[in-house]
Image (tube, rainbow, N blue to C red; front, side):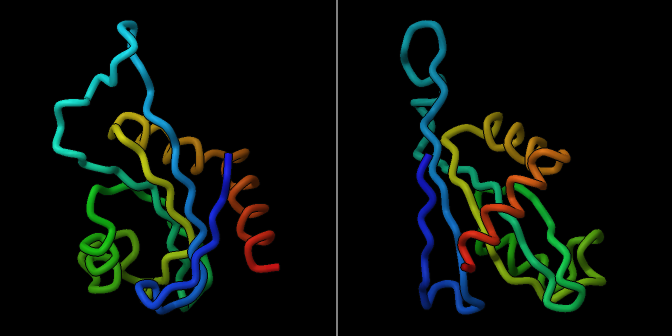
Length: 122
């Protein structure tokens, strides 16, 4: 698994670590959602610029979702805004993205994420 650290004007708040996963295959060896129009699902990690806590979520439109978080449309994150994007992973299916989001919210997932973010900053 390869982690790419990107510094880009597209993400003005700084560091973005990005990881891309291969699609899951079903019994026939074909991608189950191959007929879909190349919709990518993302699991993302935001960091609050107020209390420096992390928020993990998933979406198919990262720009829209980040705008919703920073505009206060998301009830859970409205009190901790503004946020910066610090990590994202791309998936071919929503099922894979939801499973990864759940895993990152677990204890082991939080530990792994913390270690990745520390290595990316160093």
